[in-house]
Length: 468
Image (cartoon, rainbow, N blue to C red):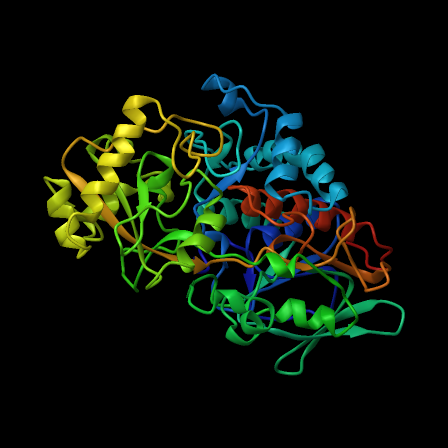
C-alpha cells in the first residue's frame, strides 16, 4: 500500500514530538491514532516508501469474540471460550496477563475500528478456534481509515525514514536517530516495526529449524526495532516457538499474495511426495507447517475435490481456491489416478490414500491421524469423491515471527530484570509473550489492533512539556 491521497504524509521531519511511532502496519497505525485521540502530537516514521508492512500481506483476519457479525450469523462464542482457546493453542506458555489483556480489550478495539469505518465480512472458523471468530477485513482500507483519522487530529507520517538507534539519556528513551543521522526527540516511543521474517541472519540465530522454509513478509521486516531495543537491554519472549505457515505456493508465483491457501480446513487432505498423509489436517497450520518441513522434499500437496472447491471464498485469501485455479496454481483431473499422475506421485499411492480415507469416513472409523474435525473443533470431514479433483503444491513459509520483546500490560518494553525501559513501548509482531508456543488464526492482526491502540494511549499518558 503506497501513500494514498488524504493520508497525512509529510516530507519534513519535526525536531520533537509527543509520541513517536515506528512502523506503519496495523499496530503502528492504531498507536498513532490512539495517541492523537489522547491529545498528543504524534508522528509515525516508516522505514520503507510504503504503508502497510506485513499487515497488508496477511489474510486480513482478526480474532474477536462476541461481535455483531457473529450474532448475525448465529455463532455462539464468548470471551471465556476465547481465553480458553488462547491458553490451549499457546500450550500454556503465553503470558496470562497479556492473554487477559487481549480478552478484556478486544471488543472495545473491535468497536473502535468499526467506528472509524472498518467493515468485516462473513465470519469463518480457522485454526485454534472452538467457534468461528475469524473476521475478514480489507487491511489496506483499514490502515487508510486509521491514518486519515489520525491526520485529522494533527498526526503526521513520514515515509522512507529508517530509524537506526534509540536515543537514551541514562534514565529513559528520548527519541530516535535515523540512518541518515537526523534525530527526532519524543516524550515516548512506540516500536511497531514488525518481526524479522526477511532477515536470514536473525532467522538463523533464532529459528534454524526454518532453514528450508520459504520467506515472505513486509519488506522492512528486518528486526530493526528488535535490535534497537535489545541494545538497551530489552528481554525477549517466545523465540523457541518461531514457526512457518502452511499452504503457501511452493515456488515464487505472481498469484501468491503471501497468504497461501488452507483447503485442508474445508475438506482437503495433505499428502507428501510418497502420496501419503502425514498429519491431522485440523491442527494449527503452524504445526502442519512443521510436519510438512519434515517430509522428504519439503513440498507437499493439498488434495481436494469439487465439494471443497464449492466452498471457495474469494473474499478470504486462505479460502480463495477458485482464484488459485484461475491463476494456474492448481493441478486438476477428472480422476484421482489422473491427479496422481499430474503431481508425479508413485503409481497407486494417492489412490490408496484417498480410498482409505474415504472408507474410514464411510465406516465411521477413527482417523489414522486423529482428525475429527475440519478446523480446530469445527466442521466434519467429508469424503474426497466428487470430480474434478485438485492438488495445490504447498510449502511452509515464514510470514511472521510471533516472538520478540517482553512487554507488560501497559505495553512497556521490559529489560532482562523485568523493569520497564523508560518511555519505550511496543506492539504488534515485534512483541512476544502473547502467543506462547502456538498461534490462533486472527490473533496477529487482532493483537496489532488491540495492543497497538493500548500502546498509543499509554505512551500518550507520559508527562509532556509540549502543548498541542
